[in-house]
Image (cartoon, rainbow, N blue to C red):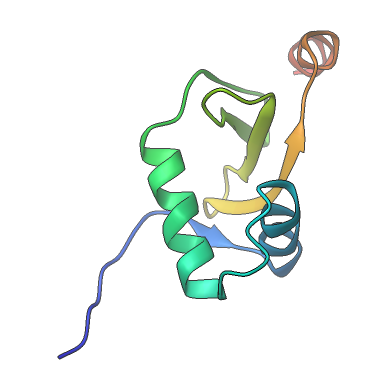
Length: 92
C-alpha cells in the first residue's frame, strides 16, 4: 500500500538544501524533510509578504520560509531580523 498526499507547496533544490542545513535535519531523506516542512508551515507563526514572496515564520525560531507567490515554490529558509523585515516591507 502506498501513501500519497498533495500539498500546495513545491520545493526548489536550493530551498530543500537550505532547509536541511538550517533546521539541522540533514539525516532525513528528501521526502521526510518535505513532510517535516509542510507540518511546520501548517503551524507557522507570523507571516508577511511583499510583491513577489510570502515569508512564513518557523515557530520559536527567527527563521522564515521564503515562498515565491507565483507557483508556491519554497525558495529558501533564512533568518530575518526585524530591521530586514522592515526593509523588505518598505520596498514593496
